[in-house]
Length: 114
Image (tube, rainbow, N blue to C red):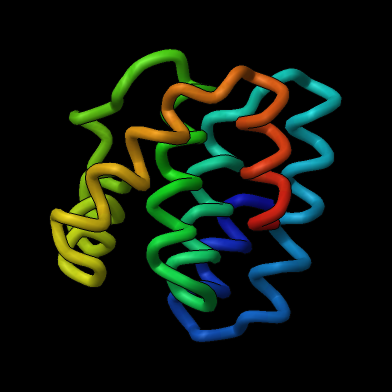
């Protein structure tokens, strides 16, 4: 389902992206596998929502992964795009604040993107 969400984002299909990431998120919750749906949920928010909120969600996704993921090209592209959209002065604190969330709050924030 995350692949369907990615394709919908690329096609500009907000409704399809929201539906696919919602389904992927529910599957991830049952399997306790959060990093991929978290990343896609952030991509959905970045494309169809507020980029500052997406930067916050990217920080929450990092918390769910347990570490930064500077070698994941999708994460790097998304971070670069968000940084360009909102600027360093807004991006850095938005992302850093939500890296510090506890797991339950990070899940809630990412879920709000789905």
